[in-house]
Image (cartoon, rainbow, N blue to C red; front, side):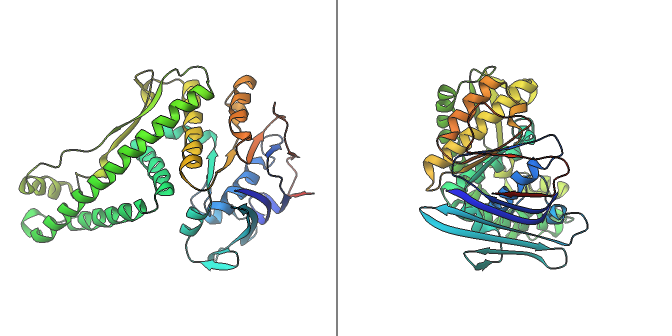
Length: 356
């Protein structure tokens, strides 16, 4: 898939954004604070109904305005499509795909494929296991949408179980319901763990291929490791005694450990800043390639400030890896080593960006 045009009103720093976009490599150039990332964010939001910088839609509304609107045209499987998203502070959000309204963003999740790299993406390496679990689960759901049903059932069971445990002593517990929910939690955990194992095998396979095709210095051997929670064998009585004291579930797939290893070392503890950046880029390229190979939709690639993370030689390697495969949007302070199909130059006073 690829974007052919994007229009936005009252989005971040832009009162108006209107771009006709070619299929290939698009770069946004300009000084810090000129709105490069805002333009990239508008494209990302229009295809996912989410921001990569904020959880709250009201943060995206321009100063002294009470709404924003984005319209994006794209081609998927040879068909022209349009998505319209509007947000009003007093009314909430509206999503239309080809003029059909959808109440939630789930439809866009399965409709589009977008991979985004930002400087904050290093949290994938330096953050806790939950960030990596979410990252891998999201890719798995893209590949196998039925996995989302398993995850949903697991979350519902975990919430019901935690609700039962909260502020209730073992003497007043509904033991029958506790037993049922425990069995369900274990059953769904094992289904999730089986899917995560296969996902990690697939991910690491592509990661090795990428390191061969796009070698970057500082990280010779990189892999993601998975240690599923396995302590399901405690007696129900002992488990209830422990959990009733804590008020939460202490078993389940939400406790699985996913770590990143480089040169056989734990990345979050031992990697330098430069090594962390390289591992993050490798992981994002692997996300792209995994989705490209195992879904029907080649992802669009968005890269924010990648040139500050790599020298020109290695930047050229990364861009060469993706530019010939998909549509790539990138922000930079200066022009990049690969010829762009469209270059847009912004300045700090700019509140409107239109092309042509």
